[in-house]
Amino acid sequence: MDIDQKTMKHIADLAKLMLTNQEASQLAEEFNHILSELKGIQAEQANQPDTSRIQPNMQYLRKDEIKPFTDRKALFQNTRLEQDGHIAVPRIPELE
Image (cartoon, rainbow, N blue to C red; front, top):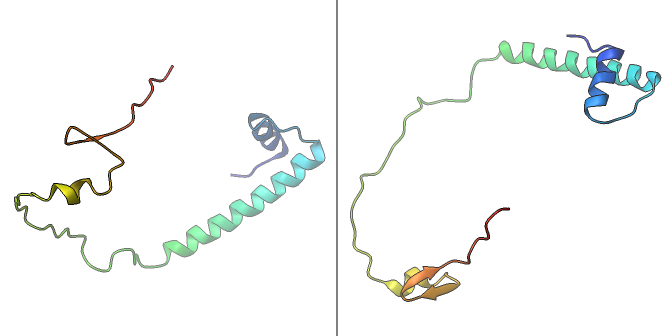
């Protein structure tokens, strides 16, 4: 897809930019150069093997174990507010 001056003016209007015809032409050329470079990169990547996964995508999950937690002091050590044995959080105002 080639970007022409008309398309560049449309993009500029969408971005609320005021471009002269000369600026639109220059930006269209720059966009076309960028797009051609991206096409080259895509073609080069198509010739490369997929190395994103060396091993099969497998999840190793640990078995769930129920353990009682009795150290309340450790539980509340990083909380800012504690109220009646619970963690208190600041009230979040409603959005208007």
